[in-house]
Image (cartoon, rainbow, N blue to C red):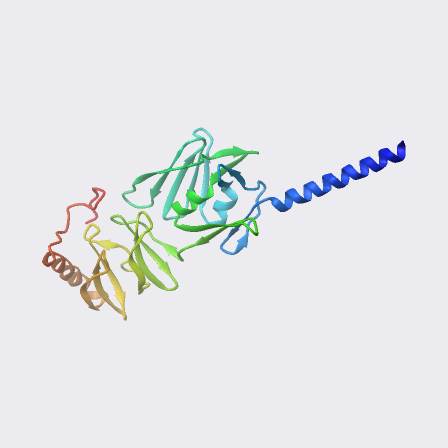
Length: 256
């Protein structure tokens, strides 16, 4: 009888060990820009969505992460975009970092919740709002997050400068590239002009102007010293095309 009991206990322990090992193997992982990150709470699958702990991932993405206990709201800020996500809410608030910020509500298919003292966020919605690429590797059971750009600037008149591999361009607030990332990386004019009607960009060491469809308004022949002349030429070119410089941008803000 004792021998049977010992055999039973040994078998049970083996089964439990196998179960724990399988569970550990099945736990999803998160990779950010090619590196696995450490988390004290594994990702959770809910309604076909993956939620991951905000602080571990936010810090890996070089975001400032804050928590407001009174409102039960997590905040992530990467210097260009701020996200406010409240526990149980079906929307998160996206705020562009700017002197005239805009609040953009984004619907969440799965609200954030707290698990084992950790705030769990729907990673796809968060990643896309921060202009990141996110994917799921089923074979490796890994959430893969990668930065799309080397630098994301501060929004001006509804557009944001983005840099990649030494070049710059502009995207709109939805993340659509409107001026291709093909111009020289220059910090002097990393924002749009004329309340969002054109941009001053640099090519071949000289400045020129393009409209927001990347059509050349002024050829690339200007230096930094005569930028004001370039602006005048660009706005004259727009008028010839029947495009009037508006009093405000598309969101009712004046950037002049």
